[in-house]
Length: 601
Image (tube, rainbow, N blue to C red; front, side, top):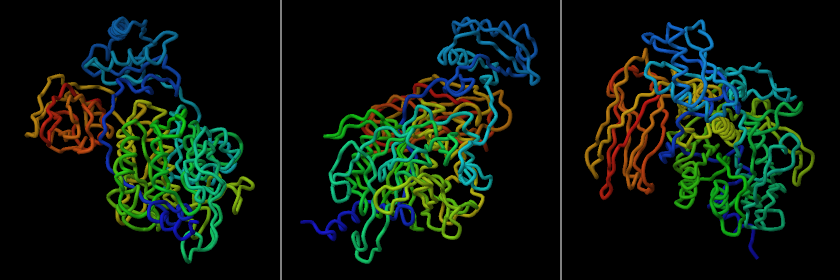
């Protein structure tokens, strides 16, 4: 019979300790995701009057020298011509006070039809910008009774500016997998819960009398004194997964409780943590299954997640096994968000923090400082509200919970602190982004979150990534409703061969007719043929010679081709001038070519 001591040794060596998740939890890493993915020609939101509703009018700004900028007759003729090209009946409606043209799209156009029209205007070098005539609505405060206590969503100092994102997206159509302790029934969350799975294979850890099954219900993870380690006190059940899930997708505007960041999204609870923690092997299977991979003995996942949240971890470097699972999930198009850890230490010494291809999240307090417990370092990508409850409970993160000390009892709400609480803020933001623009890749999501962050209002010794995540600015940028100066595209279609294991080649694009600097969300689309893309290093070179790394070499990325759109904060660069795409093959035996690339301002 296995003793609790032998169980402890296994768990401490390879797993997360759930009781410590919000007081001394995980760590997370941040290496930019290089895996490319097919780009979308026109982001969905650039063809929408409101989220999910196709636009019926467009606002078209012409460059000052264009006849259409001053002549209504010319603008009318241009609308008719572009409508003919797109197969639609367009009408110039009127001139706006700004000088832009309002173009009516007619009736019964779907989003694809509108996107075709938008593409026609964007391809015209005389057009400075084309945007949908969006439908605005009052930004009412949610009627959830505890919303006023959720400083982390709305406070000016260190809140994540979430309400400003809700007029663009609410997370609709996106499933977030919460790989954690499972889910305990809660009426303020249940409507947004979809089927998950219990991946705990060890019955003792599972604490539910069996091994793996299709029921992710959380029976509680309480422990007796000394049960997990000698000298440990007794712990009550944490209901940790339910707290995390509520931050992401608590039901909102239902007249009770709290508001979720991506309240239109669904949460799939995957249970991997129980008594004393959980095994790497179970976590790896959960990552695989959540992202649409196959796990032996487990039915196919009907709720494949586009975002994974892992508010868990332990000390030590990322194992090859865990890294492989994360790589595969990201390559399937799933964004992986991980807590940076609560040990007030360098996050690089923790796993899955030490893994590549994750978004690592540090915790900030209510004043915008790094929380005293939060890990830090160069592997951290971003900071988000994690709170501090050591002096005032209300300075923590309020979310859905249960009052049971051991098994489930009455549902309630409570404040927790931790990077475990910060990570779901970013997972919720990723769900909003994916809802606003379904074509976004994990690399683009990570880049946009960092590019559109704001400076921490407080201090962060050791490094907290790009800054404090800003939901409104980020969602607006990826949806096409902000973050750029219009949508004009400059393209190079001259093919350039890439020598095998040779010197870097460059492909130029000359940008003219712009004013001021490039945008903070400059879109760089690349189409590169190559038989082993992991050999390639790809940089954007600004007119003044400054370089921006788009893709690094990776010996583990053996797939073909780089077809992707990268987001670059080029706001310090003059827009006009010659930009270059620089590509180098750093290893032998494979060759390729740059087919085309483009800059969208």
